[in-house]
Image 1 (spheres, helix red, strand yellow):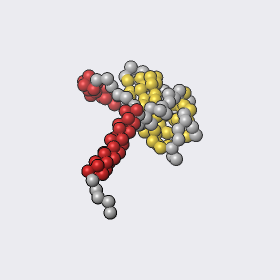
Image 2 (image 1 turned 180 degrees about the horizontal axis):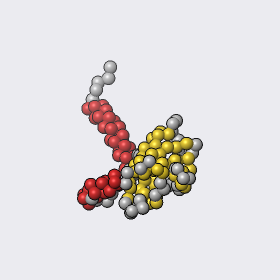
Image 3 (image 1 turned 90 degrees about the vertical axis):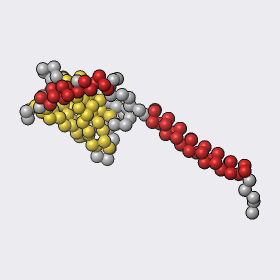
Image 4 (image 1 turned 180 degrees about the vertical axis):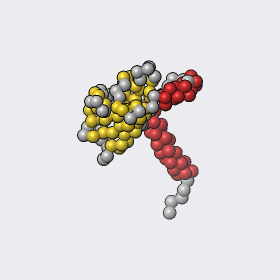
Length: 149
């Protein structure tokens, strides 16, 4: 049986802490690399008009839903139960945790739905929508789209 010396203990500790440090650095690097970015530049400034913006958006009485069928993203916007086609200022279809698969759908209104071709495999997707009403009110919403695997 070999006698345990000081350098054996030091080597064991150095190896164990080396693994911990390597894993932490790997996780930190991947967290920074996949960070999608900020929603707003200054959250305090954005909070000052939040209640008024929300009230104006709620006053529009829009019901918004989206789904995916056959490679086509279908967005339904109803106002008082009737389909409408507001001006889409921006729409981003992608994953919640990464911008790598983000797409900008080009919607076309068919009288009932706004439709756009997209590429999406299974799982949860987000449609981040900014649309402008006829009266100039900005409507913003994140719509979760679940795609069957």
